[in-house]
Picture (cartoon, rainbow, N blue to C red):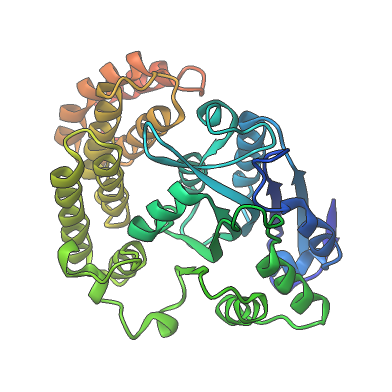
Amino acid sequence: MVINGGDTEEPGTALLIAAAPVGKGRLVDASSVLPALAAVPPGALTGTRAATVVELADPLDPQTVLTRIRAAATAAGPLFLYIAGQLQLDRKQRLLHLALARTTATTMRYTALPWHWLAAETAIRRPGTTTVVVDLVADADAWHHLASRGLALGLGVRLYGRVCPAPQRGREAATPAYLKACAAIWRSGARPDLPTLHEQAAARAGGEEAMLLAIGTPPRVQAAQPHGALGPPQDRQPPQDPHPAILAAARAGRHTEAAAAAAAWEQQELRTHGTGSVQAIHWLEVRADLARLAQDPARSCELWMAAAEARLTRRQATDDLDVEGAVDRAHHQWEQIRDLPRARALAPALVRLRRTVPGRQRGALQVLQRRLESLHTGPVA
């Protein structure tokens, strides 16, 4: 549905996801927030005059959720994802997942939504157009993971909200008090900016142990510590996320500084988790995106290919979303290269990758090969 509201001319999209396991594994009554959000004028959810709102209540299948997220991510205007639910940690790969209705500790890898899927789908959007607002409860393993590593999405994605530890055994399931507070503020007619809304909702929701998230806030909010997170990893204070400061440096034109900080984090993860670890690959992909922001498509292409190769070396499937995403981004960046010799030098490796990972866009390999042929007859179109 498209309904009037808000301030800007470009229509916005809001995707409301409320998900938690059915039965004794449920830590939060996630769907209880949907009536409160449904009572909010749609434009308030997106800050736009026209808004499309989609709800997902207690979904069963991660592919269904992924399809909805992917569809929402194609919107040209502002995208807001509101997520209430619980986080769990895959003990084998040590990856965070959003638990769905059929999720159990033993079936998590097949019945929950990997958090990095969400990161991958939002990463391809234009920076600054995507906001994710969360009200989450983390089980014991996930909470310990978050305490040391934090929770973040890709560069250019704003992340607000809170994460709470799981209620003690025997207690009732938690409620999404933060998102309910947001809804109450909007229903009162107030339209504060995101940082102010976050502060007000967090204060109303309470919870002294909660981890509050305000990643990608405007510079005026982060002015007290924009450079501290760019230092070497060992100099950072614990639960402090480096991504916002790195992105701020890149957007301010300090591309060398941003790239150096990301490289330092990659080296730290290599020392801690080893070559080919998902943690090290993450920072390799951050460096690839920083090269894109620095308008160096050749370097970005090279790094995205390295990330794809690293994931394939980990025995990730050729149709794995992370593998496909890395190859797709490498292909896209290669098409932006205007240096003919560099484009020709990178092409053979990209063609080999495309043969291994054809992707979901039909004819991508053929398009690549035709473009490569054109490099021998004239400038890149």
